Image 1: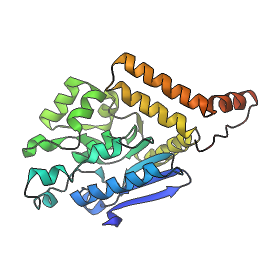
Image 2: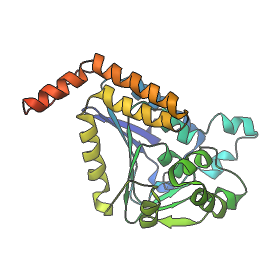
Image 3: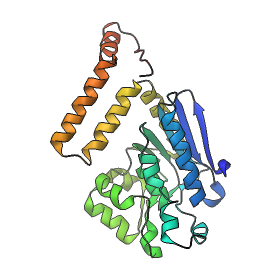
Image 4: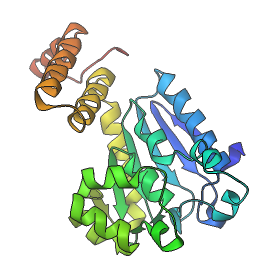
Length: 256
């Protein structure tokens, strides 16, 4: 089982690989549990600053749930407690960059939506086909999509189950970067290295503040942002950043 979800660490970047290319990286409930375990470990590891998420092979980032594996669950309760794709990724305090090639469908789309930044290849295709199979995805698409692309476009994708190409996904704001398929991994790696060079506390604070904006009233969000700013200042981040700028040198942040 552990070979189906792989985690490698390169310096301060943790790379999670959905490793089932012969099945287009379709996820089983057991793989979902393993993904959650790995993410929990990453969040506790101060040596990890950024997470890179990708699928093995070129055919798919992730084609969603392995429907055959779900047949073994005889109740909705069992399914509910084993399939939490999007929320698992979204719960990470550290930034997550998704490298997307090939098919990104169903649960794969929900995993992608949990990331903070998405790099897609021009050949990638996206969709939420669950409604065409008589069910609703349980990994957060109905909650995350409207926040990302708006109510109307979310309804179009979720109600029709239609696929869209990478160019349209980029125009909708579903992905933030659109590059040639051969450049996806290196572009995502370069982005991870860039984020890893910044203060971990500052990066995690930005993520926390922006995520709070999706659920907090404006005034509460502003107060929370101010608290995070004070925390970064107290940790010496502002002082180090200002000194490095004035001295024309690279910043040297502590582990925070």
